[in-house]
Image (cartoon, rainbow, N blue to C red; front, side, top):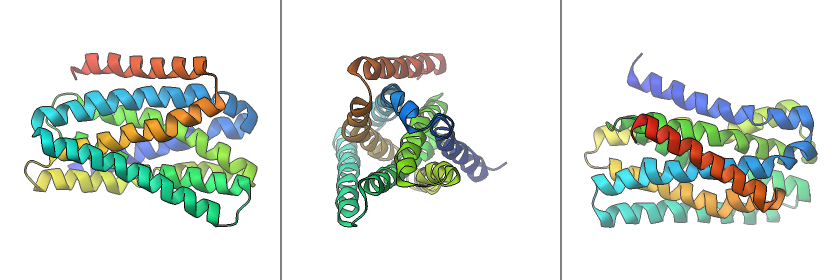
Length: 246
């Protein structure tokens, strides 16, 4: 299998992981699934924070010049924030019900931020540093699961069927596939772009934690459950990082 096909298969697997997150909502219903959302979103935040810092930003600053790397991280963060704000305004202006607006916003935000996650997958895949690829890709696959739960939990009150909830969750992560391929090709073709690519994806992931994952977790869970989830997620990734030598 050549590298392009292997990367496509890997990115597809992370996309499918999002669909797995819809299963608790389909099996338990929104109320019970929402009860666990605080813990799950906290877990995703912990996983993403360690992956963004240890797997993307630290290697970016070690391999690239400080100014361009910092600028790329800021651009990534601002792009995520602006995209989320634009989607929120459009959902509110569409004249939908409260449930419909919420489902559109959740779907749109997750769909949009999947592209920089794809950049992270492709950039990590292209890295020659031992363990970086597996570390970042595993982190994104893990955090995709609670994103699937959030998507299905928002779609169910809006009247979407079980099948649409599952495929809607999967669809939110589809941009990871082209994003991974674009980033990988860019790193392969353009010398010196890997640090900026790492920083762009890392900045977007950290912004996602601050403006979306943690606020949503606190909305649906206690501070204790969110803190526990975040700590568990961070501990898992730190242990994985040690095992991989990251």
